[in-house]
Image (cartoon, rainbow over the protein chains, first blue to last red):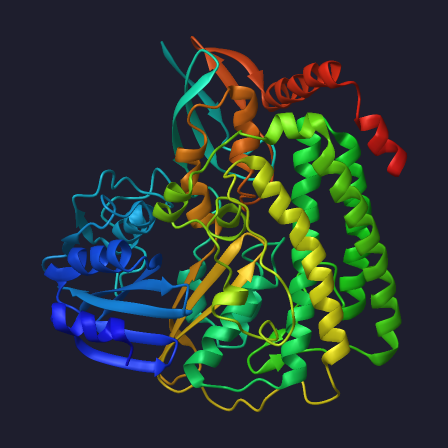
Length: 140
Length: 400
């Protein structure tokens, strides 16, 4: 386990910590802690925000925030679940411009609302695509 | 008074769909709004409907220029998921094809940038030698583009011993000409005047926007997946990462030009070191789990995430191309530029979209000019500089 993992476990409610390979580490944090985790990784540890992957799962909308530590080549993937009956989570874009577009994309493709995002207008879908149809939601 | 100059929905330089709304005051750019999505084809939706092996052909078609990077990152993600060990020879072949692709992509960009500065000699010259490169790729992979070399667990085709002299011959030619012309371009006073100090993307902005590849390395951010998280043969061969901290367009051009020479060095080292052997591992099933693959494409890190439920298809496949991060950083780089420079600045990240060309400048509801107009404006700036510096391009023509 890396030093950063230990610090994350100490500071946040980390569950399901898994080292798939030494360079691919996955963990879950509660939804309310994601902005603090992102600030901790980006501002205090200079990790780079690679991208986020959002998936429709049985437990809710899962968002995996991938942070890359370029000096070691490790990717820390932070998992957060957003319940389907209240699909909202704090936006990282105000403190992390790199997250701006992907949050817009997740918003239009899965219907997750990002609180505090400066502009949640659709990024990829056509202008006449209905606003209440989410292409990556299963069963629609 | 603020006016809006729309560039797009097709980029006049890259001939690909994106829409920039430049907010200008007089000649000066004060803001930028970016619209993308004209080329959204729903790959992440289609991929889970294909088998693990079919998805390679899908992701290969995400981009025609770096058509090796996406399948490469995808097979790395699946290999990470299933913990597959790839035979050594296959790793060398993967590196060779990826580096050839990098040179061709950088040549493409330098040529286009030359054309839009009004330096058609640069354009003709780089594209002339790019042809040799595409012929070489055809010899090795069977295709000039969309090489179809990647398979989960290895590569599809071996490099034949009898082809190696031809590969070396082309490499020698490319190295000689690239070195010569790189010096000529970097010493040219007009090119320097057009690119130096223009389109500054500060190191701080580069980090905040998470930019990648030559865009980051031209802004003093020393990141390169080939060094940071090396896959294939990158950690077995000697090579240097090219980084400049000038943050301007000239730095980005320098990174790309010098990287071509590094790539030639890397391909030679691979050819020297690889020994006969298998090119494909036995892959039977993909277990449940998740995997991440990343590859340094010509424009920066390509990121693929796949998830398996143990069936014959991925249940989730996320793709992040480098332009997704780089294009967003234009908002910071273009501020303070003149309109004539803006076309170059917006193209400096080497954005990657798709085809066709259309652009209009509107004022009070009337059309003022089109794509040609902006290109002419950029070329006129170079002409003005040429009268100041003499015509160094005639020297370049002598090199052809």
